[in-house]
Amino acid sequence: MPDEIQTIILDSITEGVFTVDKSFRITSFNNAAEKITGTPRARAIGMPCREILRASICEGRCALHQTMRSGKPVLGKNVVILDAAGTRRSISITTAILRGCEGEIVGGVETFRDLTMIDTLRKEIEREYSFEDIISRSHRMRTLFDILPDVARSGSTVLLEGESGTGKELFARALHSLSPRKRKPFVAVNCAALPDTLLESELFGHTAGAFTDARKDTPGRFARAEGGTLFLDEIGDISPALQVRLLRVLQERSYEPLGSVAPVSADVRIVAATNKSLEGLVRAGTFREDLYYRINVVCLSLPPLRDRMENIPLLVEHFIAKLNRIQDRDIAGMTDEALTCLMEYRFPGNVRELENIIERAFILCRGGEIDRHHLPAPLCGDKQEHHLTEQGSHRSFSHMEASFVINALRRNNWSRSRTAMELGIHKTTLFRKMKALGISEESRSGE
Amino acid sequence: MSRTAIAAWQGFVATTLDFARTFFLVDVVHGQVKAKREIRLTNASLQAIAHTLEIAGAQAVVCGAISAPLWNAVEARGIRIIPFVHGDVNEVIQGCLEGTLREERFHMAGCRPGGHGSGRCRRRKSGPCCG
Image (cartoon, rainbow over the protein chains, first blue to last red):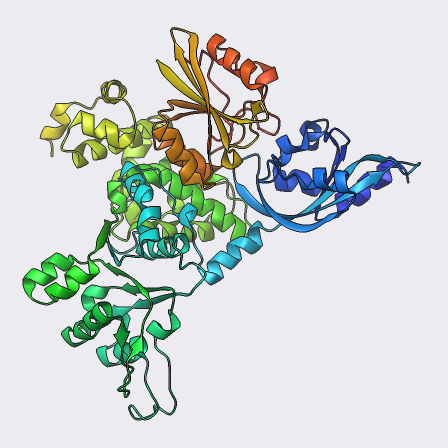
């Protein structure tokens, strides 16, 4: 078959296909391969395939190598690759041998299917998040990341404190997926969403006849989470009566379903979360002190988004990429002006609010970059409009940088050493930056 | 003294930092290599890679491709990333000392020169990266 026809056929299929010679240098590379790897054909041809595919198995357990050595194909092996933009993509690969006219081995062929969309949707549906799904580069979050694996392995009860939308459930899921209980269920309950009587039945289950309409035994969330993790969100909202029952489960590792007198043992790890100060509730007498100490074995405080504004560009980039994948769109990014608006906003709803803002902008933005007029009105009111028009796009970036540095200084009570440490830069770099942006001690007097 | 980590595989710079298991730690004093030792990772997670580089005292890491989450994890630890490097480890160390890593022979294929929004494909700045 002529080469041109072969190329047309290969380019018409949606699976990535490339061929290599005996030294694993790429000899052909179809359209879909270009799209999945992000590498143009012209750059890929002649290169070692591992430098283009960058798969988790390239160095050590290469499937093509295995096929060319054993003569046997590898079918549907799932691996992770890095595309040219640095995005990790899940793909499924299949390999085969290429033989010449005499039957001699002349190279290999690898076909691969992009599973990123399937993987994203699976994660969305199953809400199975890992450590790597928590997007952050802030110093405070990094400290949490460092201890998270040890906390997860410990099996201790964990209390997550943080405002609404700071990612408490994401952390709880990451704790579960890093723990030895990861193969068992993760069950989440929002304690504030149900009235007390229903919550009791929901948590502990009930037996037939326990109350009107209870026609059969129904397992509760504790039973469903057996061997796994039970995430109790908004634990500060549970009633004193339920606090007593929960305390008993934590102390005795057993409970009685409603209507039953036989105790059921519970092998469940509790991760609790609250957006209130439990310590404050204890002082106010609305939360039992003994339960507080039972829950508060390890306490992780998640900082609000306004205290880690350096994460905003990163989160924006993440949400744009995620929505582009899910909605099959091609939004290029966000303009400096729009980013400035976001950097000046306080985000009372934290990361969830930011995600909603980006999702809204996706509806309004038909293509290109998300601009400030795609953001909700409170974020880009007249005041900012005047300010931005006056300064222009170049200066708006400086302004954004200045407000970011000032926010960091404020958080650290204007200590340059602590601020530099938080930003991960040397303090002389911070000093230079402050000077260039016109930030001085006088800026503080305006507070 | 400066300490640079080089992600390696069979004597070459590892293609992808995310999947690298071997690192050379190179100590440089006044432009001279004073020590070079090898460390191997058993834990494969991204956080483990970033954490190991930090506790090993690396100020910079020379690598091939790198994913966005690992980039963030490494950068958050104040470690400079010198990405998309290709070649023999010893030649790369020499390139680091001489400030010649920008030369074409050290460039990895597949990176879009001129950069991408996220900055993952930024080219290296000139000047030595060790010492």
